Image 1 (tube, rainbow, N blue to C red):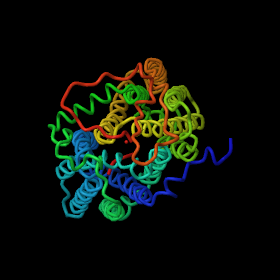
Image 2: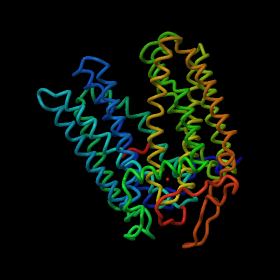
Image 3: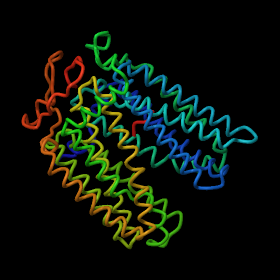
Length: 458
């Protein structure tokens, strides 16, 4: 296969100035997020004197972000998405500046960190669905897989460089500098994103006062998103596949034990284990050009998620550090291919009027799933050992993914767009699925249907 067909497809960056702005802003955001996350963890531990406080602060962020994501999904389908992104960016910058102030005062307060953790989670959740939903409008549906690869790079770039950089800054100038740099990144990113055009959720109906989606109760709007996911086999299937992978075979909580007891190393060994998946993820993104042309993305998704489970199982069985790291690189590679395809299929199989809500549900699962998985692996690791837990978890992941793939025929038959109708001509991805698997219409108030046209955290 020619190199040009497997290397990352650069057309979204070349052809869309607006996507270049989004990419640059997200890159700054992901790096800054890690600076603040690690800096806050260090400060919380110093002030609270216990890892319990570190875990509780992260739990508070996760719970508040879950709430924010559900509300943000509704907002992203009702208001101009560009305006929502800019407002949440401004709110995030204020939160980080308050963290900076708290770190600079003579006696920083732990309770302030808890309060700001709630604010950061809610605001981040409010903006993330809109940030995800604007991608098709910026790059076109034919480039959504390639755009997803670039957004994945921003996440992994932050994961590789952010923690080490945050540690160096915290040990030198202090955690206040971590926060200040994150705030500066939010401000620069907001300036870039302010140059985007208005991005209403549905240009054909956004100003229509009779649109039921704009007037229904927020809880009913969220429920409509749930109903769509439940009734759409492709999206339901990909969410179940992802949940099986991250809940049943999540290894990160066991890296310290594996590094110390199995590989007989110290903190450097543990650091290498945490870095290895990010290396594989970046390799996956850089050679992802083929994902936009794959005939059966659902089948490849099932295979990639199974590869993740097999790699985790092999890591649990490995006794040599080099082999364990190699398997984690493979796991990171598989996870990135899976994420690119999941993101592209969510975009492709969701009508624009539901992009925010369906995207928020996918993001909520992507956020809460790993947290649950790490909690499970950590708990079972204490009972039966890290290696055994990872081995069993990997086997369970492969079995669950294979079962879901076998049960969801529309997921196996899913496709991604290669040709598009002329401008103004409607396109309905649901028509590409097996008609016998089409969901029955849901009862409820009438809604204005548009032509179907969905990290990351703000």
